Length: 244
Image (cartoon, rainbow, N blue to C red; front, side):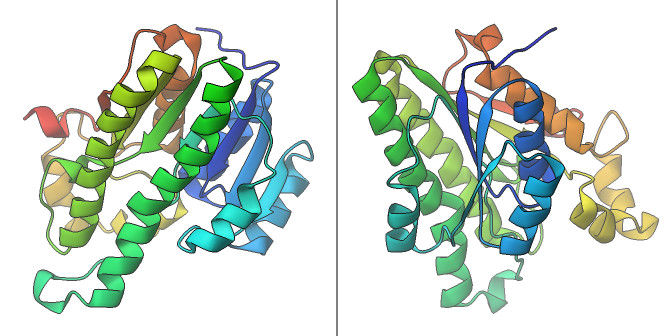
């Protein structure tokens, strides 16, 4: 299935590494003019070295005022991927206020803010658009030491449904992808040990974790006109984990 984003402008948050970086590069390959947002300048520098057509924006999305300043002149955006996340884990009895606040600020509040900025422009232009929020299987299944992370992703799923309801009349579609463990560089570090991974792997009918391309391909589909009647859904990219 050929997907082209020629003439489209895309914004990807958390674009320095992993899924966000691969998504930014894939969108650029498909013809989109991409703005990449992350908080680490070195990651942006290497991304632009890899594809000079990408416009970098360095900001900590956990800072509302800084984000407003950084994105106020971003220009018209047709496609938005809210991928930025704070993945730090703590067991329930060890959760701290800072951990809770940082998790919700980045994983939920930033997605709300960036989507507001972009969707206001989409509405004003009357051209519609597509937004994909990167959620997780953890939004629907409790995982040990992931209590706050699970809560943020559940909130993101419901934020997505609310956005789909309110933005749909302006032909702005909003969906999530909900991956299982993804074999990013960080994922390989955390899950390559067979002893650690066997329990999680045993719960996935396909018997493997997701590769980055599995998630990116789902994001591209949801962004594209190939999914023009898909709105407000949470799309599992989990090998069947949530269905069993």
